[in-house]
Image (cartoon, rainbow, N blue to C red; front, side):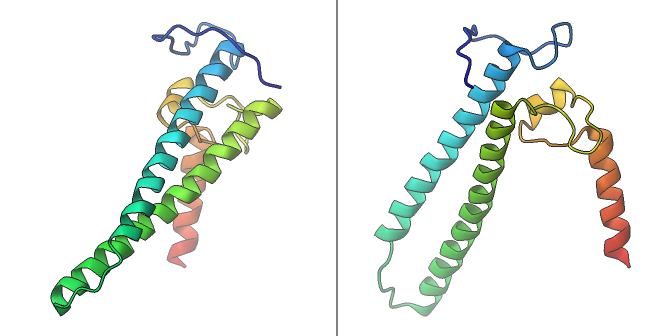
Length: 140
């Protein structure tokens, strides 16, 4: 259920208000939606650019350089596609009332962390533990 809430342009979630109240949820919904729109706009520009640059380049060095650029651009777009999926998941969590809470501990994720990384699913402490365990297993 989407709740329309008026937010002034300078609104920032604060620790002295109830956690994940309507204003905070609307703030993060807008932040995530704008981020997604930016990424999708960039992707559209890239696709148009790739389609426009599909031409035969006679010089082998130029062709190799162009292919490298295309591969890099496609890898970047793939990362952004995955990011859009995470943004969509965060928007779903907002709709389901689960946004802002750590998926491991159930505790609130700090507002500073969410403002910096609105797709975060773990508190900073849980994320650090996860990364330490991942590093230990990777070294095996």
